[in-house]
Length: 200
Image 1 (cartoon, rainbow, N blue to C red):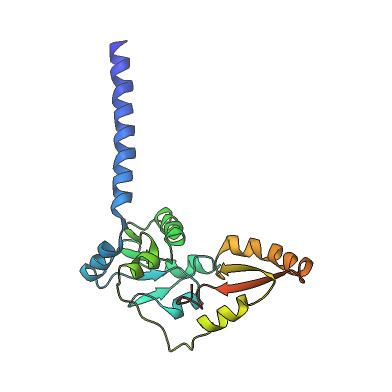
Image 2 (spheres, one colour):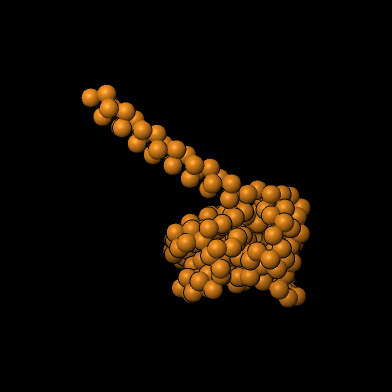
């Protein structure tokens, strides 16, 4: 009986150790902005993968990053070209898409995937540098134009959205219905967050 109890406790300890050790490795691979920047500097040859949409990428991304949209059907093919035995750095806007991408990559055999916690939002808040693919003319509206949209007797509903945002896409049909049904009493102002970063 004692021998059996000892075996059970031994196996239990192995399971606990394995779980906690796995969590520790995972935690080390989720980095804040400063840690992520240092990792980029320490590993200059490591691929940096931006998993946002091409439009988001073109408007601002990390130096030397390549774009592989996590929501594109070709994402798997794009990451399959990378060396799974070597470190890879991934990021998105807020951290949710890159966390999902990192999970997929690890499940597909990547040994070291470093994820930027909080994404570009935290990176920008820390005042760290980024670049653009090309000169992009501002498609956003000015503060004066925005104020003019609010100058009405109607109730104004402001929808700040992004093309990549799944909840925003689900909300769009309801906003369209409100606009049609309440056309005489409600004005809906839709602001694309990516195209109006300064205004937002």
